[in-house]
Image (cartoon, rainbow, N blue to C red; front, side):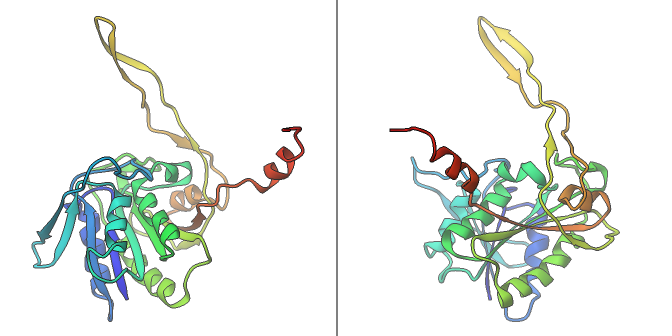
Length: 259
């Protein structure tokens, strides 16, 4: 099994190295790393089209090697597809992200976006994120992480996905609470409550500087969601896809007199 590891936190991220160590220990697994050279969080599915991309081969402390690019997480997946590390991967794993990617947050996440590229390329993919103990249900990065829950479940999931495949057009979004873990739940995406505000920080001759992202967001506490699973100390495994078409709206709008 050829696995591509990428992320949106950069080549030095401890979560990525925990993931690399865990997957490398699986028998018959060949692991390749292509990540952004620095943090590219919240870049979603952006790609680089107006300039060439730099790539540098990096040697890790344990003697392993990987590639760092000045592109986005999606660019990194494209590098693998186009032959930077030889044959195309059998599985894409993005993470382990600092902090959870739950509910509506997945639309902003560079981690999830890298996995979504697997749908475009026809390669099974998993996005995995780990929450820290002090972060609660917020996504903001904290300092202390124990990546063992996310790394542990990934070894099992990677084997299942490789052997069984995934439903067409589907990836897995995996979020792990800090230990001790109380189980695993297959859950649906929940809904965020964002609490952003417009804060004026400075006004220099009409050139204003604003901060628009304020307090940590909350969430709707609903059953069977990824938010509820994490709140209960469970690992949340959520199948998600890219098909944004509203079938019901097609039927309704087709009845409009559009000429």
